[in-house]
Length: 166
Image (cartoon, rainbow, N blue to C red; front, side, top):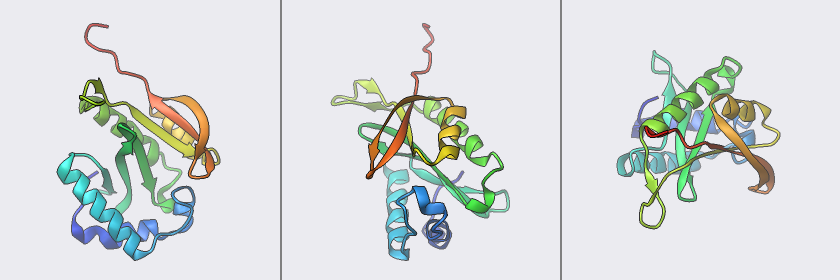
């Protein structure tokens, strides 16, 4: 994973304009303007709060997805998208597991006075069986199934990591 640059618009739009890739992320391909707005959001988030959904690339700097965190209420939401030509190779599980480890290593606080640790949530459309499997493998625990964006979604949460006094 790496940070975004303004020059990454073509790569992000290529990923988000694929209707198959976007099936479970908004349900339709994005326009270039929508991808541009998404990139602007990612750039702002990485500069202001230090975390976002980052660029995922190969060693030869070819973008193959994005992954990281969005906001979910006052907590973090685990999110990832892998180029469909890269699916089935375990990359989403590897990415999600690395992101869970990053969340644990970089705690943040939430609540009215920053009085509690941010939790990590993940959710997927119930029909996105692969993503549900990824979250389970990455260590998130099933919480419930409920409506989100007009469709049933399976919600997961990372259990609080043990503290040194446990």
